[in-house]
Length: 280
Image (cartoon, rainbow, N blue to C red; front, side):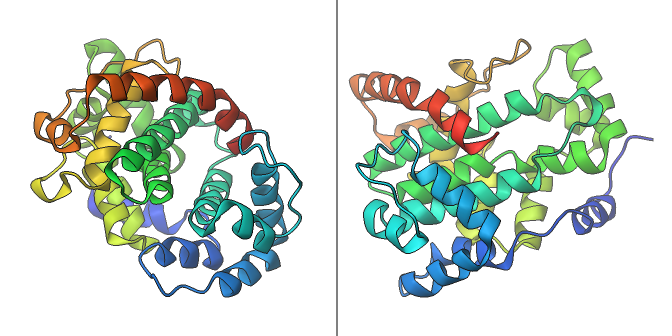
């Protein structure tokens, strides 16, 4: 029996490791203009493992700082509040699922795809004058439902991936055919359970099929970013297929071809370094 019900998903989600409270506070703070920089910095500093990983990323060559930062408050001063919030969220969520090895699932390809989508979402958001660090986090987490499925339901998910190979179809089509559930819906359920901000829940839920209210906003940005990463084979997945891009979502970005080509060069320059520092 491979079919998964909403109750099955809810039970599986409840058995996942919880995100640290400070990380949930960080994610909520993206939608709180009055969020206290000092208060959040103090909370992160109390979680020594999270603070250490955040500082390691901040001090990597990816950011090219001229001097080493030794505290979260320093990192915020130099990199900015939004950038450090994005780093904290990325460091924490990648740690929650870092030990998975179930069912032959290619975690390396998964994280390469996630990081690539985050980087592209950040660059696209910059062009639209949206919060680019928030877009990065949404892009990084867009496929988080797949991690729920592969870690909590490994046998059922392996059956779905066998179907994908046999039919040479998209992952989401295989999930719906075998599980009667897809990773976008599962990701939305997890995002709701972890009380992610609404726009992040939308980006996760709609990244394959953006809705009208998503246009020219972060969910549409994540949709285009994800398709681009597939097209450029940034995950290095031999069986990868490029998804269909929503014409409405693409038009809503208003990008010129020359702008898009410039982003390709920027993404290539940043991608491998980001992979090395975000996931060990």
